[in-house]
Length: 325
Image (cartoon, rainbow, N blue to C red):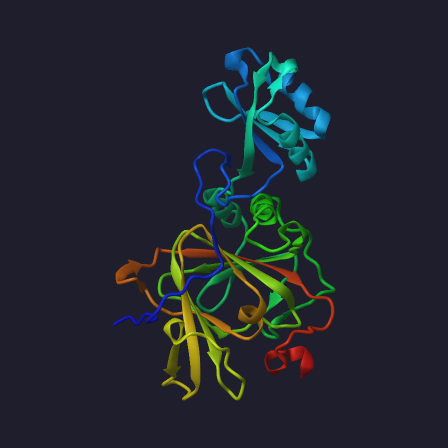
């Protein structure tokens, strides 16, 4: 019989579910982007894309003007940088534009939507490395499982272009602090067959910086976080949010939280969760979420994005830090 965590907690998750269009409405209020959705202009009202571009190009370099849908009255104006889009929004939103027939333009930000099928097709077209129970790919830098670290002197190149929409979405998301300054240079792609999980571990402190992003595709799972006692002071948290467990395998005590990761969700692990809590995917074929039984898919693919650390880790958790040993 499959076990499941007793309690599910909310984590720092962002949904990447989106309409079928390449561009879509931001999922979070206040999210900004170099792309603008502009209503009340387009070929159906006598305004060509070139006409529209001649107005919006005054605010910065354009990537292009595209039809937002089949109506012919709404377009996407895509800039090469965020500042140009913000300037155009401030100057033109809700104002009649004499150069476009005096029409009032209604503008909001639009985000480039990562297509999970495109991502899966991209990695499936490239060679996989086979581990004991799962397959992996590495980009930017290879993660060496024997030493649980990376060789910073051996760069595999820049991150692949198929990842660009995902990186853009991260950099424009207000849920992440200082999102526009986030730099990521290492990607590990994992493919998990049904029943295969991940042993409890903390990503090596000296290998990566603070932020770890994990994008789930193709199938769901539960990720569990454990804080082992082992002489370390436990964080003060309300008893209603924590389950204290006596581990039958090793006799150790730990507290745990669990997060359900649906397909197309993005998890951010940072701070104490990154440096002091082990994360773990139970080796189950089914999970229980709020009383519902959820069967794992025929495969789950995760994209783990990180920034390789070039110096020593100076975190506040020396008992877990290999840089202090």
